[in-house]
Length: 116
Length: 114
Image (cartoon, rainbow over all chains, first blue to last red; front, side, top):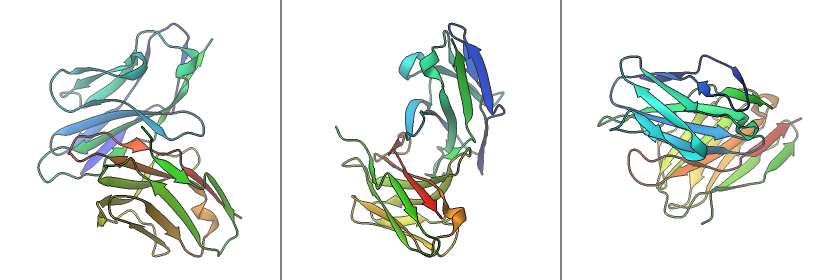
């Protein structure tokens, strides 16, 4: 079984400040973790993924995420937020073990609002 | 290159009518997924194709929903006898062969059932 929790429905941050969007996961095998962003009236766009290796993953648009196995977390971060980062962010997980599901499970999404 | 495309972008229909939604995946992507996104909600998995076979149909909400895929190309999602609760954005995604590849999403079809 696999599941994802995004505990915050909304995150507010001032432009120029660092931002964090939280994600915790549960998976019985090896976690493959993904972040996607959805702008209004658009499909989801891939930001970054963790498969194996370095716990700190860098992705598109200056975003990064840190994989923490002991806390089963994969929080999305950016050192300095832009107003244009305002969007809906989804975390997803799938079990990368042999026999694991090819279907990722998505969180409910977190709305990020960056204030000028 | 071209991304995932979906048509129509918007569909308004009357309760009880059938609708057909189309997805054109990225060329060469063997995996194709359909999701439903209700207003303010996350993604609800509907069905997964590997090539033209559907090993996982577990997310289809009722027998009014069906989907097919031609080879490793276009897929259609059909909803028969639409109900108001079917109103949502239907998203299609594709991914390349390999167990850890990310999904590429289309812009979605917004379905409104009156």
